[in-house]
Length: 94
Image 1: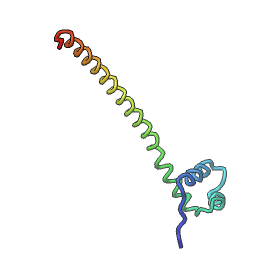
Image 2: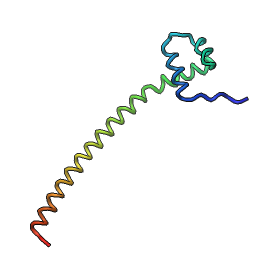
Image 3: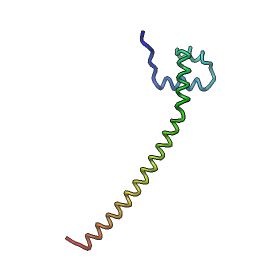
Image 4: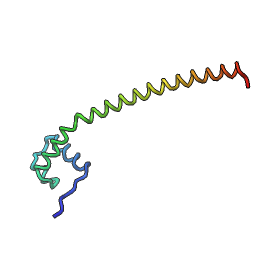
């Protein structure tokens, strides 16, 4: 017998319903045709993984800030080198 495969979107939808506490575990299990133990597992995985969702956002913000800082430094270096090249062109015409 083949096991049912559920998409991530389906699991997220079911867990959202579960976290609302509007229906019992048994009601949701029946409604979505998923075993109650499976729902408990999905809820546990979701609650465990929630902090990492925010860590990724923080990490992305840090990476973006570092990128923009590096970009600013590189543009400053380009400006400095352009000025030097122009000065050298004036001093040493070919």
